Length: 464
Image 1: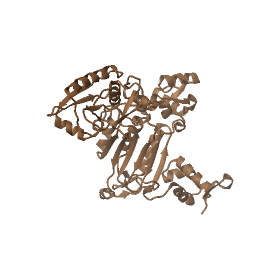
Image 2: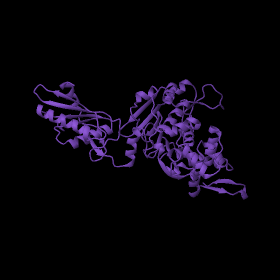
Image 3: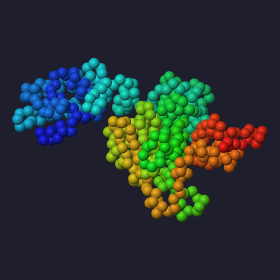
Image 4: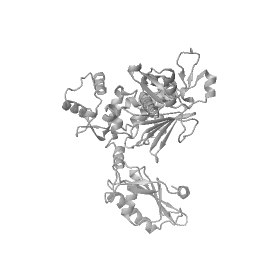
């Protein structure tokens, strides 16, 4: 590195990849700084540069002393030992700055002499003080995977019909006759641990009510008017829970009912063609559900705006993956148990990193954002303006283009069709049965809706 290049580096200031030190005399303190870099994404320490960016530099005597101190700290005071590089950059007036390069660690987590694990936090460092962070460090080195996490759900929480059908369809095997044989089978399939409870993968795929056990792992979907997030103004909203397969199906249905439909010369009674092919959302939703970071206790968020659709997953890209790499088909399996079962037909998953490339082939106007600091990954699918769709053919507006809430829809339908069941109402208004049941219960409680029992014909009365 030349002195000119070094000055440019200094002007960028301190951040999570760059740190300044006017001098170094404490080997233990330096070891903790190196461990923090190695446990995060690596970086450089510029020794001879003050916090304010000035360059007091080092003397030749200081350079010899500090280089020896660096070697001792990296090999003796960090566990496991680190391989670091130093470069002495000289200025014309004799000042020297040591550029200490610490690589991203391959053997995480790294400890200092006292057994403390450090992480970079902006320009500073901080201790790892939670089990979740420690698990994530082990996850990065494939020593641990989130879908292996133990839960408190016993095998009695298993959806026996769903699991029975899976065994029959995939393995041509009958459901075990005894609890002991069922437990052993689940353990052999990596769906339960030695404590005989379901692990997270078993809960997410085969529990009867996964949201009761892991309520944070759901999908929250909102259709906003316009192109910005609103606090209370929305056109359609729903939370999707249940086994992964149900979450996928419900989330996909939410997106498709909120898209414009094009008639494209088809008959009036024929279903319209969606503005964006359904396969695009199949691929991206599967990726969000299967490859999200389940060590982050947060839901997947699905936002639909006039000009775009955003699928926001907890967790940034793992290891050395970048947006550029996933666009050409590179992949890294974060949840291997989930992937192995999903690939057997639970979801339309093809594996081998082909989902992103397949979506891009069908609809190239997709952006991806990997937020390392915020621990989020966002896929943004851009929509065409309505004017362009109208030029391409007749356009059907989706039912939710007018701000009609679910209770209002229910009242409107039941006013003219009082003998419909709630399931039939759900089909008419394009909502899930659970959403209709919740909304109708609120209407009954508010005195706006009343059910008259079978003795009087079994019908609904809308109370004006």
